[in-house]
Length: 170
Image (tube, rainbow, N blue to C red; front, side, top):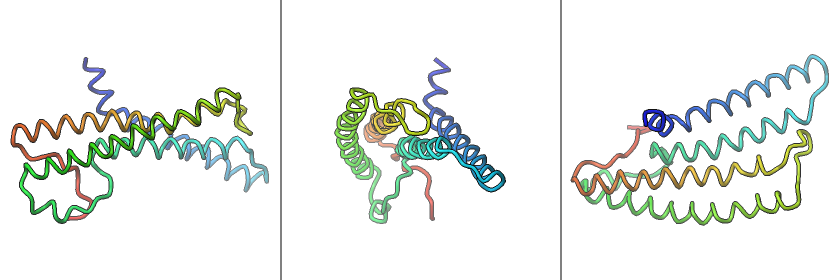
C-alpha cells in the first residue's frame, strides 16, 4: 500500500523528470552534432518533439492535482469556505466532462493509427506510442479530477477550508 501511495503522490513528477531529461539530453546532443560535425538526425528532432508533447499532457494532469491551472480568483477570496468549495466542485465537474469527452475522442486518432500501422519518419516506431500522449494525459487528468472532487466534497461536508493550491502571486 505504501508503494501505491508514493506512486499516487509522485507519478507525474517522475514522469515529467524522465521526459524533461530525455528532451534536454537529446537536444544538447543534436546541437553538438549540428555545430561540431555539421550533421543532424531526424530521430533527434522526433524524440524532442514527442517528449515535449508528453511533458505538456502529464504537466496538465499534475496541474490539476496541485490546482495550479491559471485562474482568476479575485471574487473567490471574498467568499466563505462553503461557497468556495461549491465553486471548486462545479469547476472540477465541468473539467471532468470536458476531459471525459476529450479522452473518448482522442482514442479515435490512436485507433486509426493502429488500424493503418503508421510509423514515425525517423524512429520507425508505431505512431500509437506517440499519439497515446493525449489519451494518457486525459486519463491521468480524469483520475486527478476524481481525487480533487473527493477532496472538495470532504471539505464541504466537514466545513474545512477547500484546498486552493499554491499561489503564484500574493
